[in-house]
Amino acid sequence: MKRNPNWTENELKMAINVYCKIPFIKAHKLSPDIIKWAKIIGRSPGGLYTKICNFGHCDSGVQAKGLSHTGNLAPIVWAEFEENPEKVIYESEQLLAQRMGKTLEEYTEIRTEDLPEGKTREVVVRQRVNQRFFHNTVLSAYNYHCCITGISNSPLLEACHISSWSDDKRNRTNPKNGLCMNPLFHRAFDHFLFTVTPDYVIVVSDQMIETVTEITFRDYLTSINGKKIIMPEKFNPDKELLAIHYQKYRESL
Image: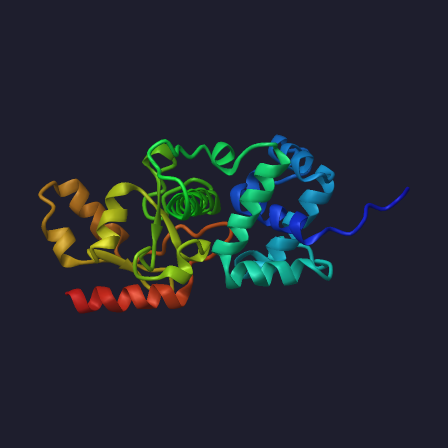
């Protein structure tokens, strides 16, 4: 049987995109999602599944789940993704749109009627594409579960930046800068009413606990204080970014 030619850099970038979007529980060669994306990329489902496992090996959070052999180019493309996720993902979204014969706006379902033409439009579209990717990737990494409560209802889940979008341009699209949370805990995290330590331990402030008048919920907040978050299947939260948030939390007390 004739071997398929080696994967190209563009194909690997599209494969990383798929790795980001599909929870591991749905990542097998007979999965409808894998079959769909493999057809778009132009590879076999088995080949795409293998690359997803390869990237799992590259991802420090899930090395045990990945295959040991990644090929010569895959680690290089992965390193580029880790260094500049915003650039690689935007390029991969463009490539996938082209493969599907769609504009980037059509593929990502971004409405642009309210946007001006020219450079401003390009900047806003890029920002919306990246925001959409970050949301989808973080929720996928946690298999659509809030890392604090375990809630798994998708409309009640949000991608929370550890280091804020406005303050940390380099990590805006970095999946390791994300925590999957429900809106209540997302807002509380943003306002430093609770935090997560670099060891992934939940720390709830006295202020958050004491301002709750409903005893059952107050007891719940007390019960999760000191427990570890529900960890993602991939893209473990960056410990350095958590340390920065934890320090800001302590300074806010």
